[in-house]
Length: 171
Image 1 (cartoon, rainbow, N blue to C red):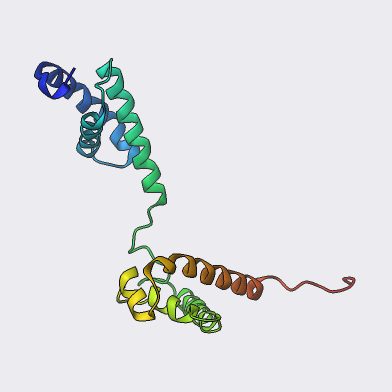
Image 2: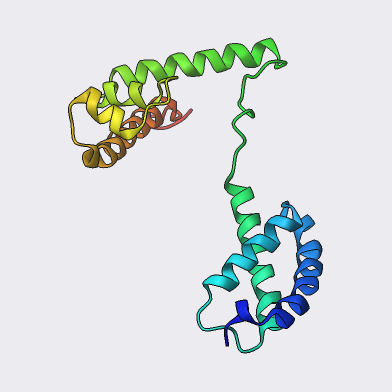
């Protein structure tokens, strides 16, 4: 059965979808219209048409709402950065010290890592293609090289931040 050709079914599902989306949207932190649109797209992509469209529609709305909640948990707004305007002077000082320590650690990385890290952290917001062109390496190797550089940086910073271990017996 082709749902697009069955206008009675679409007219019947419309209010149900609106009600379900309106109920789920506040908990998911999205607009009800966005949920509706995502479910309509899901329905268009669903092949063959669901045997029980109303039941399928309810499940699809809940699934889209869950996806929206997961995305919202992973998302960090760009404007919410530590040391932003209005922070205490001590926070700004500590943030500046952290930045200096990070820049110092990046400069001590081996090989091409310092160049790559500077390019990735550049305020110019370069693409992988642009970075590969600047560094003279293939775009496909940037990911693995970046991963190795970040691992090296992580180990370096962890050893500097780690609490000193007492050798021998403590007194």
